[in-house]
Length: 92
Image (cartoon, rainbow, N blue to C red):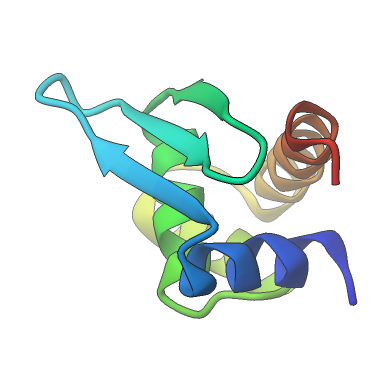
């Protein structure tokens, strides 16, 4: 299972919880590890996309390109960086 699928499954199972804050950012809480991560608007967008079923890098890149003014190469790089940081932060 790739890291994006793992994160998507944790979100669906409720072991990861995401909340949107009034300023458009968010927080991600790992319930079994008591980890709390703050998310900027783009990170929140990606987490919400995973929660909605986007479980591959290509799916996340496509959503970023469609939602933001970003080219595919930049979106791919951003998704890879975000995924690495999330895996490290959540100790997956």
